[in-house]
Length: 374
Image (cartoon, rainbow, N blue to C red; front, side):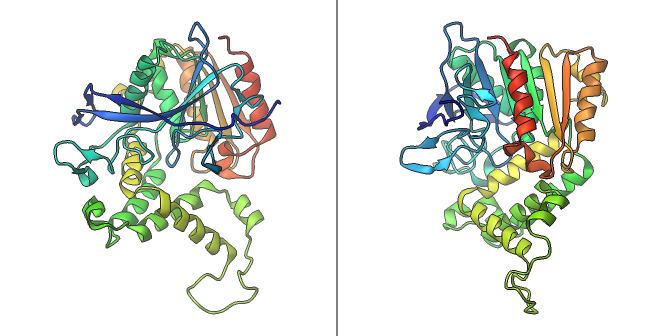
């Protein structure tokens, strides 16, 4: 039936004994990647599509788990039979990045040199490091070239980096609600979120695992800050306005407004499943991404080596990664004479729009991917 879920999925694990040399100069002597696949790889192995996740995402892109049907993939409305990324045509891969907290080697993993969790000793990672690890996974799966690499937000940065690091291994790049580098304001938001975590008494310099605690308050605040930037003013006004939680003013610093209740709920939920050290590492990777830096800030020159075709999408009310930033990408691609399509979607939902089932957005992606030959 068109439009249904990919159904029950099972995470897989790949162990890599070959050292991964990171951009920081640090080395992971051994690491593991957890991933999921949907659809079938064709005989020519030409229909593979990599989905890159954003800050709080994971390998669990679509479907659900047999032992937990409520655990639905974060982009389930986007990936599946008859959906924009159609698994009847494409073999789709989702990977939990190195440094993550959903099974791949990260700060909670055991450091083989100490027998204890890495914690504060886990090395800094970059977007480029993630792409390198993803390429090694593709090698193991026998995939020499991706039909497409797709991502939204931080995932879009990875998709762009694929075109630069492995230009001969990706035919199409779909960069959604993303940016060629963070603005000073975005770096500032990330720093406030990190300080919220690191100033939590339960953080213990990043080695809270040994104390059996979690810097919950810091994580809650970090997520609350993040959520404010993911939503547009229109979305907040429409969903919450100035509605009082209890129908009357109580003159307290507890929850008074519905928006406060929502932010606290999101923060508390996030603190139950996400790792604080992963949050720190991931926001720093966001900060560091700047492919034009080694070309004197010339993004067009950075894209000169790309061979892929590009589809860049933005959303009108996304002020975190605004349409202006997407147009920077498009202008650089045009200047470097690359094939690129661009679409700005009218949406009231802000940065989170890329995760939602917006009909115009989904129709545009579906139409583009229908034209991708496998």
